[in-house]
Amino acid sequence: MEWIDIGVNLTDAAFDKDRDQVLERAWQAGISQILLTATSLENCHQAQQLCAEAPQRLFCTAGVHPHDARHWQAHSSVELRQLAQADCVKAIGECGLDFNRDFSPRPQQRKALEDQLSLAAELGMPVFLHEREASQTLREILRDYRDQLPAAVVHCFTADRTALYGYLDLDLHIGITGWICDERRGTHLHPLVADIPAGRLMLETDAPWLLPRTLANKPKSRRNEPAWLLEVARTVAACRNESLEQLAKHTSETARQCFNLPTPDA
Image (cartoon, rainbow, N blue to C red):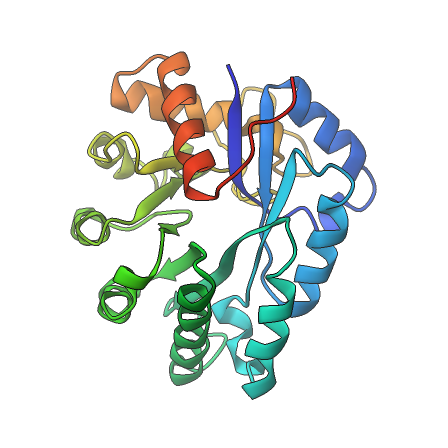
């Protein structure tokens, strides 16, 4: 079995002391490829440097998170376009809307998102999307761009059935994290994940966050890492009444197709 983790914040300081060991544990656990999440222009540079160390296994996004949308300026699109030219960049993002925390004013979130969607359409690249308590607004914005985008994934999906079906109606992909392993707030995802068609579903850890609460031996640090994607997979497979082998096969194929990932060397 091989797995692809489509969302790891590997540039985060939580990994500074043992980043190489974290990756080695991931490879040993059967993770064949990882998409590193970039959330700011500075972060994009850092992610690309990491990708250069394992060019067949590590890839990344390039974009600005809605939390940082307050820093988005006219020159940001120019710089992002340059960053996106790198071979390791496989999607524009993490971009989107966050009406839960509102760290950036909503008009600025919308402006940064629309500019990044326009850039993705221009470059013919998929989009890696963030959404919290903003599904209706996100869908309204995406309708104007969807036909111009090769693909788009709503990463770390945590919303309700209405949001899920709205995203599926727009032919979006859905990323599922360890949120589904949380008995306090994630059980509503159990029936929903079974409704996501094969070909639209992908798996991610969002490490170092969202440590699966079903993990038997949780680290004292509470830090998540990509090796524990299998814990997410176990819950998803059970909810979908699939074997791990079946889930690994179709989610990896979907990720490889969505992000145009090469087949890794044996």
